[in-house]
Length: 236
Figure 1: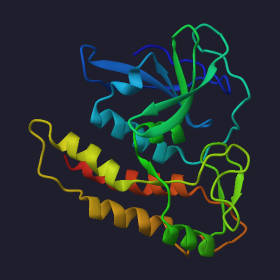
Figure 2: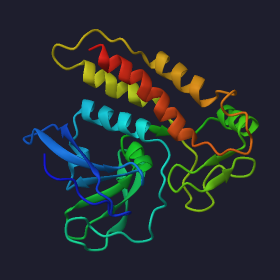
Figure 3: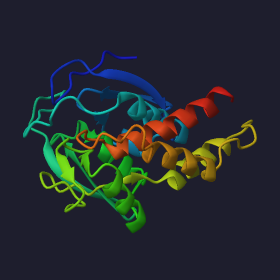
Figure 4: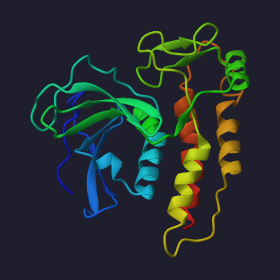
């Protein structure tokens, strides 16, 4: 494993994680900064990750919790120092954003946008949104950390990111891809179990009763599913 890169946002050393890919190159080192909630991918590494590598990053997001650093207005490539370019992209039918090196060295992407790229996010239903409004009223934006008043907004007034929940069905599909690999055991985590775990954590009224506290509902949902997945992986 190579030495970790410095975070383009806070300049602190990132955590390097070796992950498997599909294709000719067997593995890659992915850099992660939990304090800023960002990944750095060299070239197109994020598009070549094996299913269990995607799940490993999902678990890392769940352990990281809420971002502690705000995103800077401008970041430099950790390899060449050039200013990263803000980019809109489309993966299947999902739109997401990231910052790319103009020299092609790689891209910086937030945890939130990585989950969007992997189709792990969905908008809350009308019933879920009403329950959120009645339960916690105000949440933190998963992208920039700004407060969102659910009584009048369904997207961040600062950066425009819509409120989103983890789509446990999409996570379950990735798990099924992993279980389809040779010598895999019989499925032990079902989409229904994942839904229940997410809903139980997301609407835990005893934890969210304090109305003056902001909650990152995306982080709560990721942590809940990551815990379930962790138990499943440990049993393999």
